[in-house]
Length: 255
Image (cartoon, rainbow, N blue to C red):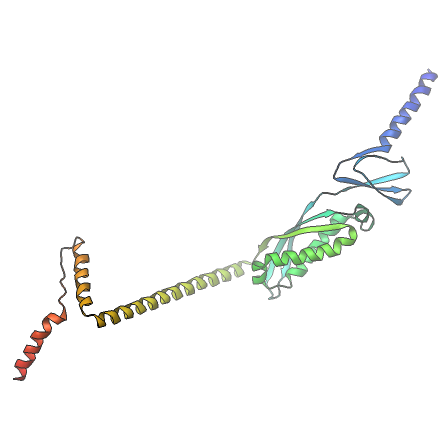
């Protein structure tokens, strides 16, 4: 019986040693290894061997992380209170720095993104925030990337998701948009009237040089009236036809 225990115990110890010593890391994972509290480097991916009790491993995910930045209260440069939220894309490029130089790189990046979002948006007016999102995205990304670089983190993209405006501001913007549309409609209508007046002036100049064109215009008008189902027919009489009679009447009155 004791002989069986003598055989089983070493086998169990070997199995436990191997279980605690052999680790398998995925392609996107790295192991930051500490030996007796001292950083010895990064291992992985694949099969790695640790010394039980002596070595301690911290796993770091090297994939791109998508972080949602909660809505932040922002006062713009023109003193308008708005709420802005965003999304940040970043990844760890130096696993050693991400573990050693910051306590929790996920929490630290989140807090940095929130403060940067408030700071950058506060430098712009409300209209600029609505119209120049790409510029604001780049500014926030540059600040985050520069600040998180000592932590071994690369910020690849920042995107504003939603801008929540106060109700009174929404009503004011709706009135402004309506007034702008009315202004454009009036300008277009005035331009149309001006162009029509110009064309009429040109037509009158042509008719003045060629009086017969006025007679042709009369005939065209008759054709257009006759093509419709009208019960009344209007026949325009050219003034040139009645001018001789008017002159004869004037002579008779003078005599």
